Length: 502
Ligand code: FCB
Image 1 (tube, helix red, strand yellow):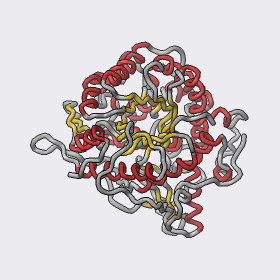
Image 2 (cartoon, rainbow, N blue to C red; image 1 turned 180 degrees about the vertical axis):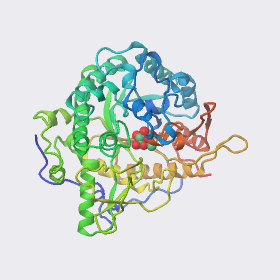
Image 3 (cartoon, rainbow, N blue to C red; image 1 turned 30 degrees about the vertical axis):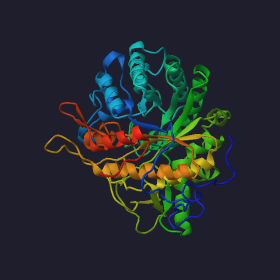
Image 4 (tube, protein in one colour; image 1 turned 60 degrees about the vertical axis):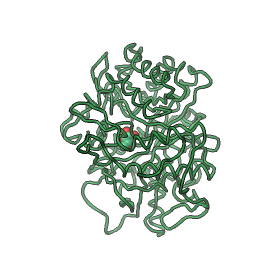
């Protein structure tokens, strides 16, 4: 295996022409105020994921994924919520696509349920499973909406978890086979392909803190999972290139953290470096540069010697990318361990656990970022998105960028007339779209924006309690009601310009 010789650039320290105490980048261009327009061809999208919306969990040969097992395990999700029914999108697909068209979306990001297409994670594809996605893609194309397909949004077939899951090499190999099956079936009509969604969450929440499926709490398994997810990405990218037409564009969606140190104290700056390695560079370095960061290997030496990395793995992982997907919600603020370190279960924003998702850096202290809070308790700070876009512009020249997720949960409720007013979400979208426009002004090649999420849905460990949608779902009746943010976003998508705030 190879590794970098230095720590490499840290997200949050080197993205600007200067840095403030908290690592904030200082750019010359101001956030655009007043009317703002976007380049022609900019994708105005929304995103979803299979397990969060489809339901019909055992229809047409689908078998359980790790999220079916996890959500059916008492105590794992709020209120015991599961994705059994979700928002019934599997049966309401055509109506949902019609709604997308009404909202003027020009692109739609969805994920394929692996166990719907290849129930055991091995062997031939199930035609009925593929037919659902072919139908979805055809409906989208018929309405002029560009499909953006994600192969894996966290729903590993349970049989593959039983055989070892992401901590074992075979899962990466199975993933490449599955990628080829989907590529062969849909390559004639889907141009935009994403291998993995947020491998950080799969590895570190799934196998480290255990707040996500499969709910394991083993730091070695978490690091092994991170490597085999990287390998799965690389092998799947190669498999896809061999079956897809040349016009296909291929990428991955990461959720990099804009990591900020609480103070400029060297110990806090070191905490930032450690978390940057575990949040960002553990994926970006092998995928973009074909190496693991030397400081990451050193920081985790008491956890593992990384001997599970085979000689050819880094070459396999380091595949050319057409685009990088950035998922962004809030910045991360850290400091060195100190006397005031909080004790008891910690929450990383996705659920509370006694186990850390940060192998080897468990003692780093996380602080709430300043600013307004959302219903998730996350802070609102568009500057982190600008910072990340500028960082990856510098780190991955020639690779187009998409914001493949960004959005917000609020406690939306219908008013007496049934309409749902969510001016806070409109302000959130406006602020983040302005941050993107600023990044474009500063030279970032951002090609589009996928709002998370098209509609309220199963928010993982939080079940149906958190509403991220542009479209309100009445879970009793499955009635869909576009919120006022949906109408605002539709106007933006139609005109290519941000409408005034309400
Ligand atoms: C991201 C996930 C997405 C959704 C949002 C709120 O981490 O990719 O499925 O849960 O967070």
